[in-house]
Image (cartoon, rainbow, N blue to C red; front, top):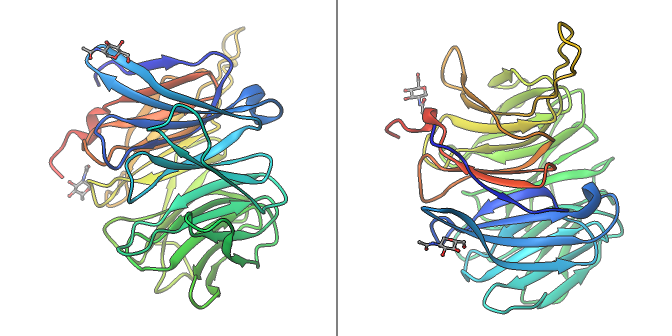
Length: 331
Ligand SMILES: *[C@@H]1O[C@H](CO)[C@@H](O)[C@H](O)[C@H]1NC(C)=O
Ligand SMILES: *[C@@H]1O[C@H](CO)[C@@H](O)[C@H](O)[C@H]1NC(C)=O
């Protein structure tokens, strides 16, 4: 693996990292002061070149920012979400912002995602107030509110294949599949016996999703039969914070967790924070383990432009871009 390019952002704890779908090497990072418990938030727009990572733009918000998503129809536009229950729309062509603030959720908003299916330009948000909202960013208020989860919502993501269809993952231990037009739940998957912190939709198979939970496991779900998972990946030793499918390799995914191990053979306690790369089609699915942060890693993304490039951000105040060797195989 090449050395990671690292940017240190003093006083900012990273929550989410998302590569631009337009510009190779441009990365957005949502961050919060004081681990998101108090203080303000910052949206960082980073560019990389041969000499490293640099800040192109930086925008502050008066509460912690927990997630970010790029517009699918304007390369300058992003949406973030925050601890005060609001969503913010930003324009990187301008030096200040936000352009718009959408305040409807009554508690922390932990996830935002911009739809990718042709013709739709909608944002979905998931909140600790147990609701999911769908927004048209050109309209100042939500189009629809979806209720059903019995605990906080950590993750919401549009299907990359089916227009109007999205998934949500919650502390109520379920993964739910929704249809915006039917305004209801299509499928409830009791996916883990633990809080589910993350989910993602496979780019190559419209029926396949993955969930990552506090029980340290990742599980794959085929929506045509959700009685049992189609795969289970074990290797993390603590809650899985984020999982993403590769846009280049049909059976590869990456996950990060709140891992730690305590060395008893030594006086020092050793905390470890891993990102793991998996190939769920292989009998031995663990491809690679990366350890380069000194605190929890919350944000993780795989580049849409480069088959090998990965970005992550951590509570250790650093953002890294790197190229794990396991991804350098023909797709
Ligand atoms: C690379 O990026 C850094 C930080 O943004 C900048 O200072 C430097 O001039 C850039 N170098 C090149 C060769 O573009
Ligand atoms: C994943 O595993 C499958 C089946 O063994 C293999 O064909 C494919 O090349 C692997 N991909 C990667 C990126 O390891």
